[in-house]
Image (cartoon, rainbow, N blue to C red; front, side, top):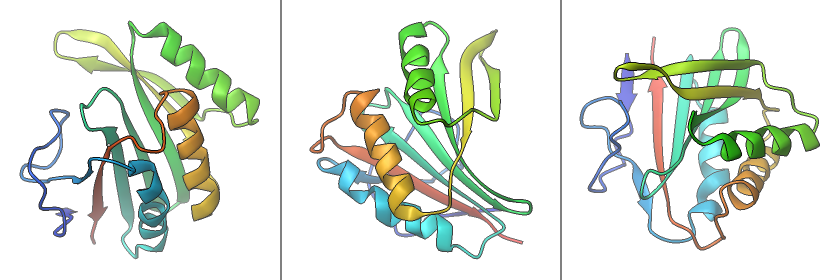
Amino acid sequence: MLRRNRRAEAPGGFALGREPGAKPDLYPSSGIAQLERYVIRILLSDAKFATLTVSSLDEQFLLGLYRDSEPSAFDLVLFVLRKNEELERSIREFFGQRGIKHTLDYLCSGGLDPNYMRAMKYPLVPEATRVAQLVADLLAKVYCLDAGAGLAFLYDEAVG
């Protein structure tokens, strides 16, 4: 069962499916500076499964960090609309330059279109500073966000 982040009381919410009533922590500016504390939170969680969803405030991009204790895994999953081939190429190039190979690459449905979106999963080392820097670099180089950009963070845990 997912347990909602009780501290997140900000208005608004993502249109992309999530637990009803779950609300993200919103940072209208300097969102990238918040990354490391959220990565620490997901890594220190005692829950069997913990997730962190990060998006732009206008929901134009979405990425997820997933930690599963059995088997021990920590991954970054990126979702790209199929029509955005340039973004997909940029993501692949970004990780290729860092020697990180995807472990999963699959098409996701969106309404009536079974090939609406691509999901790409990349393994991460469980080190908060390195992961936060990698995600910050990804946001800057691929998504063209500067340090002052706003972000939304949604943290969830699976208990039991």
